[in-house]
Amino acid sequence: MIILTQQQIAEINRHAEAEYPNECCGAVLGQLEHGGKKTAHRIIPISNRREAEAKHNRFLILPNEFLQCEKTARQAGLEIIGFYHSHPDHPAEPSAYDLDQAWPVYSYVIVAVAEGCAGNMTSWELQNDRTRFREESIIKESDP
Ligand SMILES: [Zn+2]
Image (cartoon, rainbow, N blue to C red; front, top):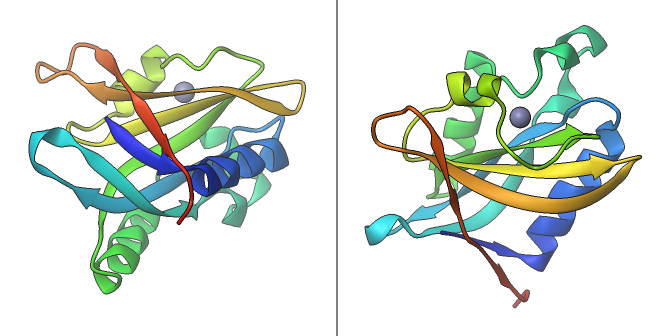
């Protein structure tokens, strides 16, 4: 499961709507606890720093972006717990491409954006054998 605050969910939704009809992507920093429970502390938007051409890379996180996120996380005493991206005019279910790009342990949060409005949000984790995703629950916490 992944724990997100209402504020973090709103940030992801806003980013997804701003990038529509392109896909947005970003990293989720936080803490990974025993039993696979993840608590989000910070949302890092990535795709809006890119050139228009790179937006067609879909949710792929480039190596330099990954390193920058790791550095930001380390400095804040956090770790990368997952990534998010949007599915413009498409359900919030991982595609075959998403499966190809996924790494174990991380959460993959997907938000569906229909006609510019963010809707259903889901989160997924790669199975140990890497053949498929399994859906995990998103626990919504109110902000402190
Ligand atoms: Zn996707």
